[in-house]
Every structure is written in C-alpha cells, then in structure tokens.
Image (cartoon, rainbow, N blue to C red; front, top):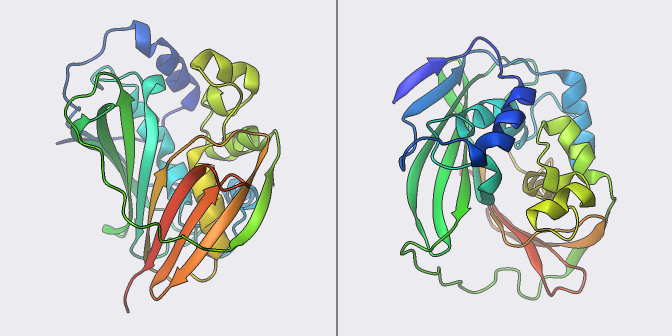
Amino acid sequence: MVTRELERPPALGPLYAKALLGPVIPGGGDELPEIVLELPTAEIDPERLADYAAVCGFALRDELPPTYPHVLGFPLAMALMTARAFPFALLGLVHVANRIEQRRPIPVAALPALRVHAENLRPHRKGRQLDLVTEALLDGELAWVEHSTYLRPGEGSGGERTERGDDPLEGAVPAAVWDLPEDIGRRYADVSGDRNPIHLHSLTARPFGFGGAIAHGMWTLGRTLASVDGRLGPAHTSTAEFRAPLRIPGRARLLSAPREAGWDLALESPDGERRHLELAVERASA
C-alpha cells in the first residue's frame, strides 16, 4: 500500500459535502484503494474527551476510553471513504460489526500516531462488505487497532448465512434499563463528529428509509462497554455485532453475563423481542 502522510486531521465539513455528492459522482472501480492515510501526531482535546465520556457513560481517567481512538481516527476514515478511488458511496454503507483490540492504554496526554486503510472486500449474502482498519501507535508500536465492518447492500454475491450458536446471554437477568432521550444522536454527533443524518432527527432520517432517528452504533457500543468500565484491565478485545437499529427516543435494556475472562453483553428492546447489539469482551491473559 501507498502511505499518504497528513499534516492535520481532514476537515469534516467538506467531507460531508463529498459524501452527499458521492451517489451522483462517478468513483473508482470495484477494488478498494491501496492507500494508508497516516496522521503522525493526533492531539487529544481534554474538553472534548470529557464531553464524550459524559455522553457514553465512561469515567474520566488519565487514559482514553477504549472507544475514543475511533473518534480520533474518524476524520481519516471519512477522507478515505469519500475519496474518488473508493468503490462505494459512503451514505450507502451500513456499519454491521466492530472489533477493537486495545493492546495497551493510551494516556490522555499522549500524541498517538493514527493510520487508516480499507481491506478484505468480500461477498455477503446481502451485497458486499469490507473492513476499515484504524490503528493508533505510541512510540512506533501498535497500541490499539479497530476493524469496522461495513456492508454495501445490493444484489447478494455468494456469501452464506452464518449459523448462530447458542446465545451466551440466554437466561441472563437484565442489568439495567436505559431511557434514550430524543437528542442523544445529536449529542453523540457533537462529541464524535459523526453527523450522519439518520442519527440526528426524525425529519433527516426519513429520506433514508427510517421511520425516525436511530442511535449511532458506536454510541451503543461505547455505552454498553462503559457498563464494565474500570474492570476491563489494560489490554482487552471487544467484538460487537450491530443487529438492529435502535430508535430514539426510546428505551433499551442491558444484559450482562460475566465469564472467566470477560463478559457477554447485549442491548435489546425492553420486552426482549429485538436485539440491537451483541458485545463480547475478552480480557488479555496476564
């Protein structure tokens, strides 16, 4: 791959304009661009971090919440996915899964380097999917890596349905019931930069086929992971599947099942009929 080093994070305003024009402007071919976008120094704004922690439910510490590097890398991800060489329009992609491996904590006072690239374009029974990889490095060593899996809906191209095994949360007692206010999408957008219109207001969500606004997937992941905040340990892996949209305003209940090396967590409708998020958290062995 070719590495392109950036002097500063890309401005999100022009990138959103490109995202809106993406469906009508011809782009690249059928392959992912072999490009790595790199920001050698990412500055961490303590006030923005504090606001993010408050929205997602994390405690303030000397180290970043495990989902916060996603926010730092978001402008680079936007720049890559709105580039002419990217094969799909950004607004047509659906975030279906996420895997975060934190190898070591990132101090709030650190200046991590960030790298973003796309890989593993593959068939899916509902279209095609790919992984967007974000890496955070400290002193040249990988400290944190995220694989965000996106689905481009369309004609199915040969992927098979994954057989689901036993539900690890079968019989779990709800740990909490959360009321999701109408403005949670806008509040998360303010702290993350992710202003996808489907999350902001019912009026902006409807043109995209939603009956109302839906919560950000990364907010549901952050809020659920925050339920075990302080018990994760310095190194851990969280693997999430976004199964169904979560309407806002609304209510959701948290399921939590501890196991020897971590937790199985889920966010579902209060009646248990709809699962929005499934999350497996695994602490690294000492």
